Image 1 (cartoon, one colour):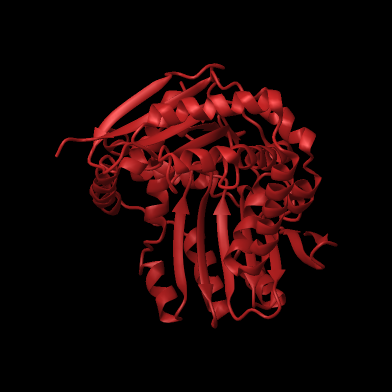
Image 2 (cartoon, rainbow, N blue to C red):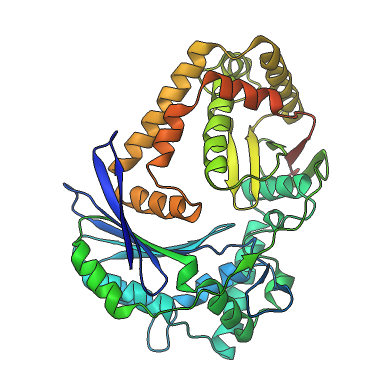
Length: 425
């Protein structure tokens, strides 16, 4: 078992990262003065992971879209009882989520920490799939998919991803399609579970009010040793240019919704973490609520308080996005691009950069006051190979020159505009 202490001189705090003999990475972050504990057990497995292989496979394996989300739904259901029931008996709150590149199960509690940790480790390590319960879930998830087909905010987002990307599976709804989930059976679920829920591909992160010795004792008792399978996931090659410049759909909504995405090459690891901070600071300085652009266009009525600018990123994708509601979405896109091109020449005002950088750093600092936020951030940082404290150091190191370089390298022509127009009632 390998153990290391990760420290922050800026915060005066530390946490422990352990590579357990089972293969699992365990991160323990006790926090004084808090009454609750939060534990999250996650795997590097999301909706984009539809093509993969291990060192036991001769060829690549491709599975139906939506299977990661489907698996998350089924895992709570054990042979004897539902894990939610066990958590509710102790007064704990539990939930789970599937994103594009992560699936995670978590609980928060003020007491009975050990009992809740046992429940978490037990059900995540003991899948129970039958032909009957898998078939039953198909109808439930199909209804969920159909509901989101009529959600304007959901559709403007995924229509936009579909316009930017040609092949990247990030363009597909996390839940898949009604057609894709109809192909899922218990054999495929077990195959994906045994591949991606291997403890060498997972992290357990615990933060807040808990006893680290108790946590490790329970882990030693309950974790099932696993052999590293040499898992390799494959992201399809992606053309440099966007797939479509503009896509539109009509749905019931009060105002048109828009999303403008600028296609960029994929980044990973520490490079991705630094670029994420740099591009967010750049976008906020250029277009955020304190910028002349925002004030001017808000006062004219072109944009409203739904307007936002930020970076959408994950394993295999990195995409600056501008979104919101407007009566003139094409005009907004035109003004955004015009402003970015102007600032490439004139430069972002240094005072605006300084303000946004301080706010970004302050937001990161304040995040350490939330037990759940700390546990999730520690896990997410571990998944990309950095310490949670590295984000503070990276934010502090961002320079004006970094931001201007990011702005000047942004190809505003290589962009896609997604619009949802109001359907006539």
